[in-house]
Structure formats: C-alpha cells, structure tokens
Length: 458
Ligand SMILES: [Zn+2]
Image 1 (cartoon, rainbow, N blue to C red):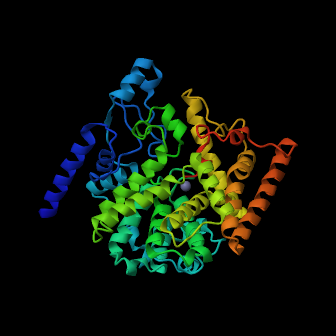
Image 2 (cartoon, rainbow, N blue to C red):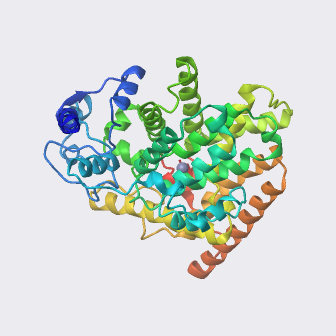
Image 3 (tube, rainbow, N blue to C red):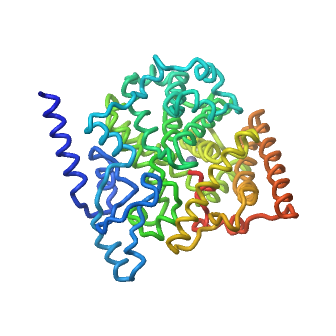
C-alpha cells in the first residue's frame, strides 16, 4: 500500500515536471537547479506543434518553426517556453518502471553475471592495446560501469574516500544510461575508452608519483562523464537550429557545459559524496568542470600553446596543484582524441563510427536545408580524408607535446601507431583518388565554428 502511494506521488510529480513550462534564465545557480531538480534537462525539445524527431533519442529535436520567418525565430529564442522532458534514456527507464516492466539490473554485472573473460581482460586494463569493443561485448554493453568501478577499486579510491559501493554502482549505471546508445560514436563505449586511456596516462611515472587520490578521483569521473547526454550532433548544429542549450550557454562550449552540468546532476542525485563537506563537493564539481570544458576542441590552440610554453621554459612543477590540474586537462584532451594512436584494428573502427555520426548529421542538414556542415557530406567526404586532416592538424601536434612532457614507451607507442595509421589512410586515399596528398581544407581553417564533432571528440 505504502509503495503504491509512493508510486502514485512520483507519477504525479513527474507529470507535473514534464508538463510545466519553464522560462530559462542564465544564472549559474538557475542552471544548476534545473539540472538537479530530480532530472536532467533533455537535449530533445518537443515543440508545441508536435513534430516528432527524426530518430527519437538519438538527435535533438529540430523546431521547424524557426525556418519559416525571422519573427518566429525571435519569438522562439527570446521568449522561449521550453517544455522540459526527462533525458531520453531516463524517460525510457521511468516509463518502464511505471508500466511495471522489469529491467535487468545491470548493477549485478560485477557479481553474479561477471564474465570470466571480461574479468581476465580487466587484469590488463593498463595495456594500451586494450580492446574496449571486445570488453563491451563481454560485459553485455556494460563496459563503462565495469571498467570505471574496477578502476576506482584499483586506485584505492573506494577505501580512501569511504565510498558506498552501492551508491557508486548506482552512479555509474546512471552515467552509462545517460549516454545515447543510438549514437554511432558518442556513446558509453567511447566514454569507457577515454576512461581507459586516462588510466594509462595516470600510470605514467611523472604523473603517478605526483598525483593525489583526489586528482585520480576527479580524472576518472571527468573521463567517464565528459560526453554525458551527447546528442550526436555538434555545436554549430545546435546553434543553427536555435536549440535551447545553445541559448542557455550563449553559443560557447555548449556541449561541454551540458556534459558537465549533467555530471553534476548525477553526482548529487546519487549521493555518492554526500558524506563529504559541502566545500569539498563544490570544489570537486568545479574541478570536474575544468577538466570537461578543456575537451572543447575549439580551445585546443590555447591549451596547446600554454603547454608548449611550459615545456619550453621547463617550469612545470607537479608539486603545485594548479600545474597538476593543468596536466590532467592535457591528459584528458589526449585521452579524448587518442583513437588514431591505437592499433589500426581499433583505430579504424573508431574512424568508421565517427564518420557515420558526421554523415548522419549531414543527412539531416540536407533533408531540412540547413546547410551541410564541413566533413558531414557523404557525397564529397571520405573517411580517409577526414582522418588525415584530423591527425595532421589536431592529433599530431597534441601528442607531439605530450611526448615532450612524458617521453615514455607509451608515448612512443602512441606516436608509432599514429604514424602507421596515417600511412594506412594515405594508402586508402591514393586508391580512392589517385593522389595521396589531399588534406581536408576544413581542418586547415581551424575555425571553431566549422570544426565537426569528432575533432572535438568531446
Ligand atoms: Zn569525447
């Protein structure tokens, strides 16, 4: 009887939340409140006209009214009454819940259903050739939860911070489920891959001897959540479709801000750090934000020149917390775009997935006459061209500096794969076009507005 009453109240509450109209204000406090009043703001916004999404749950809703007249655009942007929805993944969960459908409890994977082979793989979680795709299959699609939980344990974080393991699992399950499995690239497997790469970097001698448990904790949480609730399209797409997130974040690091705020929402909702002081929790949220925001590729040149200057002057002192956190930002940036530094077998799969996501965005842009974004046109682009540009203008400069900072076997291995993979794509390019020197002009411009999602890989 008591449970039925709670269900009833919860149902009424959710119906109220999803039916109430909210006007956005842009204060930091308001943004935080919006993210944690029980649910995250959804990336999809349904218009009053009732249009349905192209692929529900995979891409943000496009409000077609904005294409009709300027006055409607103004109404749409300035006096927007946006209907709040649960994030799609969580909507599915709660609707299943209220329909009485039992969902397999993925938090059990670490006990009863733990696959022997997956467990075996975790013993080599620090290997650079770790196959995250295989691991995801072995864990039945739970790679992010399994891997991150394992790393928390491995680094002694559960003990050090006196974490409740059930709360930790719940938090990680929520994180995994708030990634969109329909996205070919920006899904929970990418987050797991970035987290695994981050772990490899944290183990590097220069870092491991200087990092505190706090640094490791922030790094792993930021890596696991850095693309949370990613809609599968890039910032220019959100801006040109007048998406409310673009307005909310004033067209600046729109996605990264959303990932960060979503992560904060889940941290608070899970109560994972409720036993810590308010001051520490606020510090944690802010530092996780600094890490996630650093993955905005439009800021790459600023970070890279700062990194280069430090290395030229030789003044990085990892005893200094600010310097350590700067290095962790660089490490997360590397982890985020490390696909071309993996073995060819892994790297090629990532390249195909990200291109599929670009081209899907391009298809939507074509269909609705939005103007196709650079690198998103399947008629004119190829995987090889995109990858060669990506490697030349973004990956090589970053990893070159990283190797100056940490000149280890891992850095040399990564640069080795990068060179081999680039040569392989050049071979493919030659076969396709008869010449081998084409670099996509979109990368040459290095303009934040035209960079596609993958180079931001964020
Ligand atoms: Zn990413």
